[in-house]
Length: 112
View 1: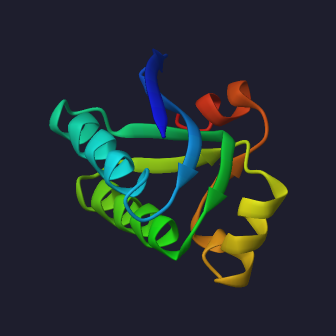
View 2 (view 1 turned 135 degrees about the vertical axis):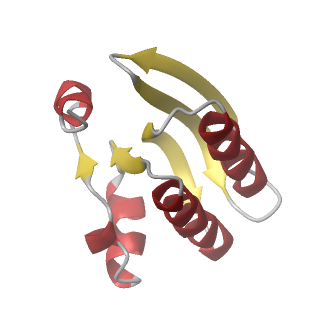
């Protein structure tokens, strides 16, 4: 998985590309979130537009990152979920835990 982090109006936008699976993306997602929190970046938006697949390990890591961010006093939100990823989160009943958006500008404004 490839990750690029950019900052807009105090929001860390994590652009991800590839898949979030055991051994391929799950650890990288965790390390990215941990690094942002260490730097006191507590407004995190995961842009999942280019995530083609996420297995159960990826779902678990996403939940761990969500919990860790909340425990640090931050917020983690999702952007551009594919229908496949949205279905996975819906089936596992985890979608309701996340704020998710289809427009980047709207997502950034939601942190204010």
